[in-house]
Length: 74
Image (cartoon, rainbow, N blue to C red; front, side):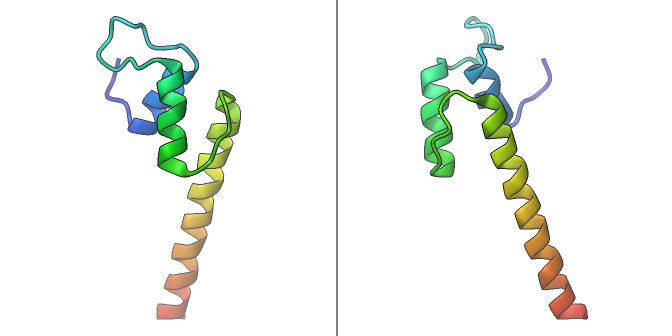
């Protein structure tokens, strides 16, 4: 297994995709709790909803960066 980002690891644990014998393993309930602490959101154990939330957040942040660049250089 290649090196995981924090979010990817938490989502994989939430989906029960990491074997409990691996050091990257945390119980799905703990993965959920950490996602809630990290984001302030509670999307339960719906991994697709979490992925969509992170995708939208990233898109929003990229949009803000583009807006800032336009103000600086536009």
